[in-house]
Length: 88
Image (cartoon, rainbow, N blue to C red; front, side, top):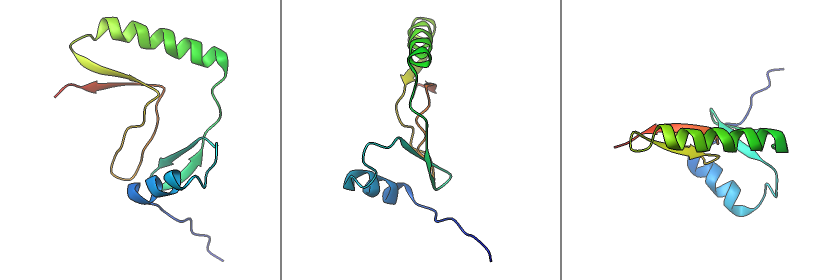
């Protein structure tokens, strides 16, 4: 027996999230698959916040510093702790 996982598009993922079917679960779309991620412990949140503030000062005007916001890609929508995005 071959087990095959269902793959979702970005649009389908957004519909699932908007429907409320996932409740309060922390889910990300990675390579078309729904992946449940662990809740962030306080220590991790504190370190991310400090690093985010540091990056804001170091990359001001050079890059968009994002913290815990989704990034929409072709078939994924990860929510990285911190991302540096090139300015247009």
